[in-house]
Amino acid sequence: MTSFSLAPIGMLLLVACLIAMLTRRFGWPYSVGLAAAGAGIAYLPDAPQLPLSRDLIFNIFLPPLIFEAALQLDWKPFRRELPVTLILAVAGVAIAASVVAAGMHWLVGWSWLGAAFFAVLIAATDPVSVIASFRELKVEPRLSMLVESESLLNDGVVAVLFAVLLAIVVGGSSSTASVLGDFLWTMGGGVVIGLLSGGAVLLIAGRTEDHLVEITLTTVAAYGSFLAAEDLHASGVLASLTAGLVIGNVGRLGAISHKGHGHLRDAWDYFAFLANSFVFILIGMNVARMPVGLPWLTTGAIAVVLVLVGRAAGVYSLSTAFRRSRLAVPTRYQHVLFWGGLRGALALALALALPKIPERGAIILMTFLVVAFSLFVQGLTMPTLVRRLKIVCGKDSEEERCREADA
Image (cartoon, rainbow, N blue to C red):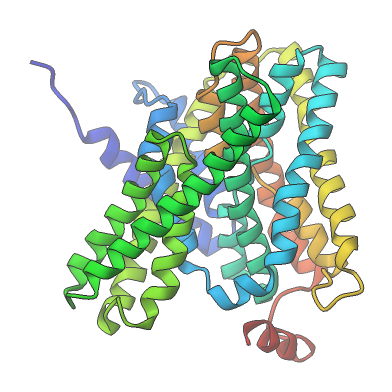
């Protein structure tokens, strides 16, 4: 009979708690501390062997992370900033992916297919570290909304494009009609499944005031919408995102009990804490064990530069489209959107889900290296950047802007 020990999980939870306490005390990004702790654990004697896999990230960790972020988004400011965030998420991903794909093909020698897969998956941004820092620093609300909502939409677009590429490789069809059909179903199907899941849960939740039942129902919505969409070859990310937006905003109108709101928010804060803790500790452990030599580091440096150039090209060029409108994005915000485009769980999940193509191993390694750079370099320097740009609330000259952003 095979024995199963919970000791490694308990140890990782204890580490996560200690890291959370330390990072808050010293003002460091929480996810960076977790990844560093994971790297340290990997070098311990008899360290637990807990490899990351596509199924682990997609089926366990990603649904609560996407759902919790969407649940917290207030529809009114989200809708107000939607033209900006949608353009950045759609056109920005296209620009960034084009730069990375061309660079990896011409500079590294990857095939166009391998370069395209890497370019698309690495365009997925993860704002966890940045948003955590924002909350500690009391960054202006509009900037927080732009960063978080753009990242969520960005993840949805990336997941859809990756699914379309995967369908082309697996299905063997690359006709315009076939590609367009896959794209529309992946995106539209995910949104519809999310709407149905969120609506169904609200209908049931409206018949009870038991906050434990309400929390359980939202858990079903988070995982159910994600997994149902994936089974139907639609976007699980968009499904969970849509369900979270519906429950978080429509639920406030009465479907979720007044008492249940606070419990629901606290419960999902905890679920997200658990998921983030395990994801970033495992990222650190797996990065530390990667067999990286000088040639791979050279390729990794090229990949990092291309990712940064692609992100900069998308953010700065597209922001100019709004410079004469009420949605103008201040230059200081653009700097944060650019440098705050960290990579994390979704990029790794998609890399681990790659089909058997010649560059598969290299793509997975490069993804880990880019994620490590974004966490340890961009993540650690974000608090300093925010302070130097003076976009935190608190000073008299900033109070009015902070109040306006919340209105």
